[in-house]
Structure formats: structure tokens, C-alpha cells
Image (cartoon, rainbow, N blue to C red; front, side):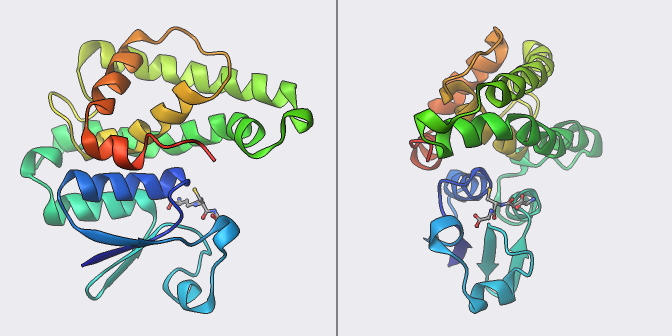
Length: 203
Ligand SMILES: N[C@@H](CCC(=O)N[C@@H](CS)C(=O)NCC(=O)O)C(=O)O
């Protein structure tokens, strides 16, 4: 049985929990990180003191997108992680691109979700919302030409930005009009596994 270590209000943990569920890999998840802390046994598995970490038999893995690629290669249907190097790479780049998006949106997320109403820095929120919106306009141009970041069908490359689409459209901040990203997000919201692990209140 796959074990996932990490609190589910983390974007990076959501990716792994959603994708494992999506491809039908049963798992148990233990809350670690944030208010739950990390004990010595956890730090022995992940010396970075970050979440998520997985344990799959003898395999201990960290780095959420590396975990996704591992799960995809080992357990997912072939179309979710194409063998063709070009098709694979064209989707895969959006998995790395997601970390830049996460940096852009980080201040807005922290201010709006993790600070009390009277303690928020409006300038930080506006600057971060603008950077996140500009990045989403790049994604929008891609999703105008293809239905999924993975290409013609849903795949693992949709997962990292799919998780961030939920916070982007849920945070109470200014957003540019990105109709193709919105339509993709609406398609993701129809997926039961996405609803279970990603569409939860932001905390
Ligand atoms: N690049 C790492 C980043 C992991 C990361 O930054 N995780 C955050 C939560 S999203 C974390 O562990 N924060 C400390 C904590 O939760 O205690 C990955 O993708 O797994």
C-alpha cells in the first residue's frame, strides 16, 4: 500500500493524493508538516524537512513532481505519460513551469489564506495577483490550442498546474480573463479524484 506523508492543505501534497486516486492506486496519508510538525522518523525519510514524501514498498521518494512522474511511469495508463519523447516533453515542461507560477502566486496565497483580515498587505497581494495572472495568460494561449496541458487527453502533466488552478480561481484577488484556463479548470472539476483532494477549502 502506498503511503503519502503530508498535510492535504499543501499544494504539493494535493498533487500526489489526487494523482494516486486518479490512477486507482490505494494509499494511506498521514498528516505531516505545518501545524502537524515533523518528527525524527519523518526527517529520516526526507532530509529537506518538506512535504510530500511517499513510501511505496522499498521506495522512498520526495519532490512532488518527481513523485508524480514515478507514479505515472509505474502505475498510470500509458496515455497519461506518453512514451513518445516529444509528446511527453511538451507536457512535462508545464510540470516544471508550475514552480515559477507557485512563486508568483505565493504572496497572494499567504496573505489571503494564512493572515487575518486586518493583517494583510494589499500591495503584496496586488503584485502577486498580477504576476500570477500574467503567467496564467501564457497558459491560456496554450489551452486555446489544446484541451489539456498533456495534449489531446488528460495526463500527469495536467496535475501540478491543475492543483494551482483551484487556488488561482478561489483566492479573493484580481484576475485577468483567461477563458481557456477557466474551461480547463471546469473540466478538471468534473473529475471525482480532483474534487476529493483538490477542491477543498484553502487553509
Ligand atoms: N519542491 C518541493 C517543495 C515542497 C514544499 O515546499 N512543501 C511545503 C508545503 S507545499 C512544505 O513542506 N512546507 C513546510 C511544512 O509544511 O511544514 C516539492 O515539490 O515537493
